[in-house]
Image 1: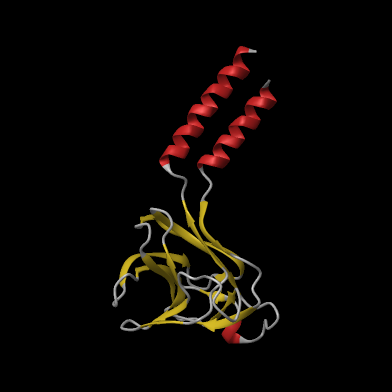
Image 2: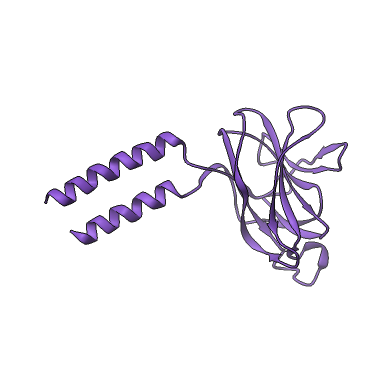
Length: 193
């Protein structure tokens, strides 16, 4: 009986505290682009919350090439509203402290979930003094609602190719509520036996 209870408790917490994937455009990168400050990806929100992204950082085939190696902090993840001709900063969170290195498949989270509007165009970008490699899905557009992009503070430039990326959100409150009700009934069932 204790084993069942612990199993259901673990299932509950994994559902409640996991992050849901809002946009899954993640795939093994075909190649890596050399990027730096202001580079990222535009996307159209599919959920009311932006919690972070998953991206591939550092080209494993060229580890000694400074322009495509790991991202060394300090670095921040930025979220811009890209629905108008001029981008508007929505939120910023530090993702790497000074001297901290990010590489491989990285899950980069905002300090707190950020409200977004479904159907609105956004851009996630990096603020860093470092040059680094970021994984591309292909050398052509594979995501119709955005592209790899560069924001220099005045002009947004989108390319005809896409990062290998996933946009993360949090479970909706209704999902959490249903999980709590389900856990309650499972506990009642285990206890009554």
